[in-house]
Image (cartoon, rainbow, N blue to C red):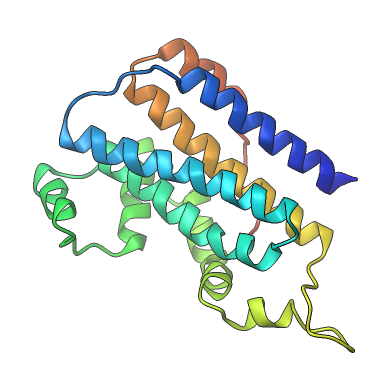
Length: 199
């Protein structure tokens, strides 16, 4: 029951944003275009997670959680934090910056150093990597006493839904901010989850 409600809520969230973002214009700079491209990719990952979960392809959905988080944070970092030189390095895939540094820079920008993004990076990164790279957490959730088959609890699936929605909101707000639509930013900010659930 909760799973079906989460599925419906996630679909409505994506549909609502697609409606609001349709036709919006973004600044014609490399920084803005690259950021918008990554944030748009985040929305695609969010939709893919929902589609995979709906099709009971749960392990594949879990493997996208880390990619969604990274893509969202890189998009925000490019828009808000990257120097012009770093944007140029990113354009040729030569950016030498650890993901932890990106998280720190984004939180410094928003005045939330040591906040929820740091907590995800500190407390859940190992799990996100295990799911993304076929580690123990991914393997053990396919083992039952009698079979090798997906064996994820509803609570675990709901956590991934919540985590994906959190990333979705963050990406959505940044895209709306970039398009200079303060009224839409305000509407979507009111919906933003206060805390990111575990993934």
